[in-house]
Amino acid sequence: MDQQLTFADSEFSNKRRQTRKEKFLGRMDKLIPWARLEAVIEPHYPKAGNGRRPYPLSTMLRIHCMQQWYNLSDPAMEDALYEIASMRLFAGLSLDKAIPDHSTILKFRHLLEQNGLARQIFEEVNQWLSEAGVLLKEGSLIDATIIEAPSSTKNKAGERDPEMHQTKKGNEWHFGMKAHIGVDARTGVTHSFTTTAAHEHDLNQAGYVLHGDEAFIFADAGYRGAEKRDELKHVRADWHIAERPGTLQALKKHPRINKVRIRTEYLKASVRAKVEHPFRIIKCQFGFVKARYRGLKKNDGKLAMLFALANVVRVDQMLRAQG
Image (cartoon, rainbow, N blue to C red; front, side, top):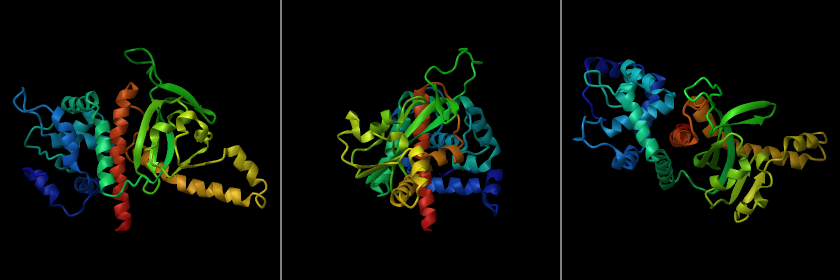
């Protein structure tokens, strides 16, 4: 992005050592198809002449992406733009001109939410990956993860989020929502996802996280019986579903007799491991371990943006591994 640098920003950009944040933002700057994403938002973005002149769309989109990467609230994002030169430069801003305040950042997020643009951005990123030959859609890995939500009732409504729900996993209770995903078996790129309350059974969402052209599907034991369900009988793929933990433990009691079946389960698990990549990126790298917004619709938009950006990060990981 072309921009006029202040003396401080210029001095910063000429310093020798690059931080990890600078390196990451530099890679994302080159890799993300900005023009395609801006084209999704542009028809809905305020035009100059209607009140106060809006900030450039490219600036607001980059700020929104940084919010996702670093899990920042609107006020925290505003502070970061003042305090962190690399973020400021990435957004095309400088200290001698106005910096978007937290309400401007909030309005941009609301614009995406109200027009369902995050989902469209997710689809656009995947279309770009398909055209580049990264998203092959040969086979799918499917899984789900629980994302906690605040369980406190100390809020304006005096109640927990009615769209979230509690569920038991193992011996622990969780309150929140679930992200169900379908992942490209070769690359670990997310091609489909749904957002539900936490108590929704994984099987009920299986049909929504398949793209329909799978040759094979790998899933954990929670999806056993999927191929027999009415809504999935049309799926012509080969299902490879893990045995239940109890069954696997029983097999291990007689390892010599059950050697082939045990080896098969380990092979299934090794293939299925790629489905964890998107969850690791959004939870560990982006820090999204707890829902910030109330309601499934807002969180679905948040997840759409996170998975779109996680797909780009996944491509970045593959490119660096090759280099």
